[in-house]
Amino acid sequence: MIDTILVSLQIVLAVVGLYQFGLSLFGMYKKKRKETFAPNKSFAVLVAAHNEEQVVGALMENLKHLNYPKELYDVFVICDNCTDGTAAIVRSHGMNACVRTNQNLRGKGYAIEWMLKELWKMPRQYDAVVMFDADNLAHPDFLSEMNNDLCSGARVIQGYIDTKNPEDSWITASYGISYWYCNRLWQLSRHNLKMANFLGGTGMCFETELLKEIGWGATSLVEDLEFTMRCVERGIYPVFNYDAKLFDEKPLTFKASARQRLRWMQGHFTVARRYFFPLLWKSIKERNLVKLDMALYGANVYIVLLTFLMTAVVWVDQSFMGEPHLANLYGYFPFWVSFVAIAANVFIFLAAMALEKVTYKKVYAYLVLFPIYLLSWWPITFYAFFTQNNKQWSHTKHTRVVRLEEVQSKQG
Image 1 (cartoon, rainbow, N blue to C red):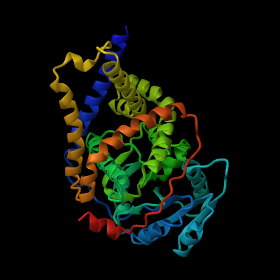
Image 2 (cartoon, rainbow, N blue to C red; image 1 turned 135 degrees about the vertical axis):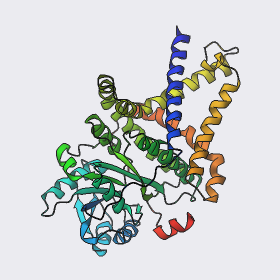
Image 3 (cartoon, rainbow, N blue to C red; image 1 turned 30 degrees about the horizontal axis):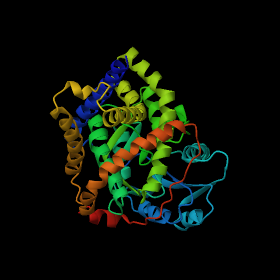
């Protein structure tokens, strides 16, 4: 009985793994450029900030120089429970500092919900809302790319999230590799197949009418995933704009990274509980592969947890029980199948870096430590499972002041 359960679970994990690998192959190519439109849409650019005085100035300067008519966009910085000089710096750059103080409803999701209500009260109404984090830098053509997609009929758009400091440490390099992989072989593959893309928390664009229609309503620890699920459930599929790039600061230390990823996984469990079965049921009822794919993406946190538990059980059985007592799926296949599975996982990350033409020398040197980063998701997810009801928002401190010119020069 136990062997049957174990093998069945291993088969499920193998099928999901093969599905994800097969899907990633559709990101190996990039379609020709889409139709471009003259600047037409107006944007409210929202920046969520909590004690970001060290980095927000660089973003304000960056946003002044976008290749888009200045009369078609305004910047609003949500100074959320700030106790430093964030608001003063924003005002010194001529931008709008919107001060919010609420010690009970803390977190980015609540800050955005508050700001949108304030935005709807203003005399000027915008065609779309763009959201950045305070530590970001946007490519000069970011709003032009959003304008192109909106004019083409898109209602929710995710830009390409790149890393502005991949050479700072082995942790930032690991983030960089992960994001290059996700952008190219998760996001672009779904875009090429005209499936729904998932939001990444920053570099997002929303049609104003959509936000007014369904409301923000995303206040979990992973507001981006929550809003993605709400959209797909309603048949609104977010799109991915490969050419709309922004650069995000990644944590420098393993401790800071673990704290950030723990918050993500805690939030993922909440969203998975809320949306997995409704989306799964709708995908079956409507015979909708897009909704099935998003249901699986939402349940990915449980897949990581199950993979960790299955690996631990098999390892203990084979290492400490003398002869193995439990069935192992790979025991039914030739020995080389295990090596092929491992090689495929190595290949997919290297392929993503090659396709994205990564030129950072230090990142390639840090590749030897990348498996540690990947494996660390297992205990983090395990701990998140038992602390998923902890809704306390934790702030990731940003200190790395980088100009867009520096990032672009390092990219070669």
